[in-house]
Amino acid sequence: MQLSIIQYPHPTLRVRSKPIRRVDKQLRMLVEQMLELMYAAEGVGLAANQVNLPIRLFVANAAGNREEGEELVIINPEIQFPKGNETAQEGCLSLPGIYGNVKRPKSIKLSAYDLDGNSIDCEVDGFLARVIQHENDHLNGVLFFDRMSDESRRDLDDRIAEMETVYRSKQATGGIEADPQLIAELDQWYNLYC
Ligand code: ZN
Image 1 (cartoon, rainbow, N blue to C red):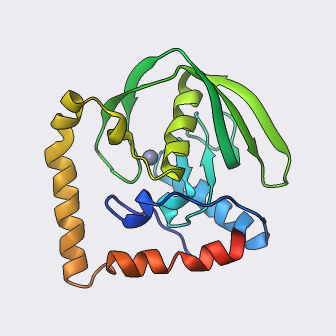
Image 2 (image 1 turned 90 degrees about the vertical axis):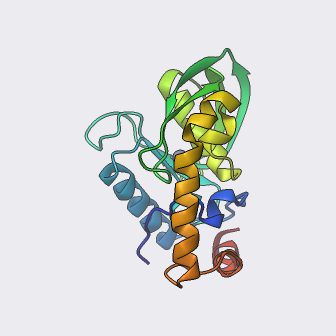
């Protein structure tokens, strides 16, 4: 199973991912591939549905480098107690080259599990809090531009529309499967892990 990062507007990016009930050797290998893809793309986070896996899992490393920072594998996250507000620029590996300002809570409490079933409970702030909120949004089918002000979003409208046109024309010529088929194929993952 070779994963790759899917691009907007692939329908799996809009799926609300399902909780993970079991972890097996294959899932550990998929997580390792997600980390490799994230570092190769010079990203700081990657959600499972960005590699077409509709399950509640993401990887992150705020340092963006395997040799530095803390590598996180986060399963079934819950975010609580948002505090403060901060606006900063975000991008997304599923919308390469598109950046915009997003206002988010400055600090949050993250509750989740790791791959071994250990619980994670921590207060997070700063850049890592932003990364975790961005990735957690993916698991709910939310993209960063959904959270932008109408005014900032308008600056990106043309480029987002262009991505949609390119994607739909690939679907029309058979280069990418139609949305209903792509969504139907997700059942295999629910059967395995949810
Ligand atoms: Zn993203």
